[in-house]
Length: 365
Ligand SMILES: Cc1ncc(C[n+]2csc(CCOP(=O)(O)OP(=O)(O)O)c2C)c(N)n1
Ligand code: SF4
Ligand SMILES: [Mg+2]
Image 1 (cartoon, rainbow, N blue to C red):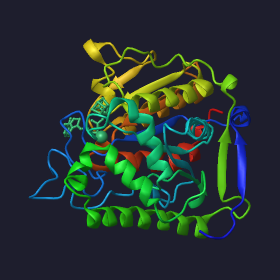
Image 2: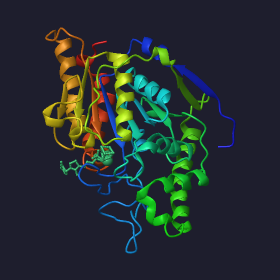
Image 3: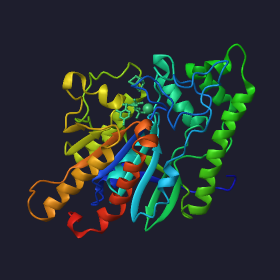
């Protein structure tokens, strides 16, 4: 996008003053494979990445296919109100700002983070932040948000984005990750790198076109700011969990917990699809979450989360519930978001983004 773009800065403190509320957020951490069951390929695995079901080598070059793009599809479901965004743990102000905005926007909310996985991506434990940051800086994981009102999405970039990924940074990223080792040893597979580069270029070009077609004429970029002293110590997510050392998911969950705590204190309920975030945070039947936490089927956290949030609000409007309805956060990996569970998630986003704000029994603000 060569045209000049205008930027708007949003203070997280101002968002926190908004009286409006959301009652359910779906958080998808995308580590690009089914990790806890043994690193199998998912719909989100990028081309050429090696997994145990598509091992890169002489017979096949790793994943044959595309990394699916699901967030843009959610923008065009016709919802009354929705907040959708991509985030990265390497950009905490942006991450926290978007989760706060999601929880202050009535309707549906979907936040998607690319989270590095040192075990499945096969990288050193001390480069987690570098890997997450490089993904954004190289143009592999673009940061943006989409605000849907009455069926029309408005697209915002979170920082400048070029359609062409930075090839040098892309190669640096690929070199850090064992899942691409077959592309760099014994010699760099330039053809494969070109194809990977092109797949990200196409995605970035799509996003830039969406910003052109559905952007805000007053600001094509929205950035969030918060001062470190304004960030409290969250009391939702305890240390001592069983995630691998160096797991990018852990950092992202801390950011998620911080933002949720700033909006709702401890009045939060977590529903969790089967995944690393579930098995590794519930060792010996003791959850790492210090608030009600629920594991259920692989694919159902959005459905169950919506049911809990809806039930509390109906009971409240009928006078059977004295407390403040909770904020429910449904957590799922890429396997349960892109593949099994996609239909449940899509239905829950449409319900919370339309029925949830049109039904008088659900108006508790
Ligand atoms: C219907 C169903 N199919 C398969 C499984 C087995 N299973 C449990 S977790 C999982 C992989 C989860 O992958 P993802 O959602 O990406 O989370 P991650 O493990 O990467 O954190 C699979 C295949 C299941 N529990 N239920
Ligand atoms: S706990 Fe984290 S690093 Fe370990 S396999 Fe799961 S996502 Fe990967
Ligand atoms: Mg996964």
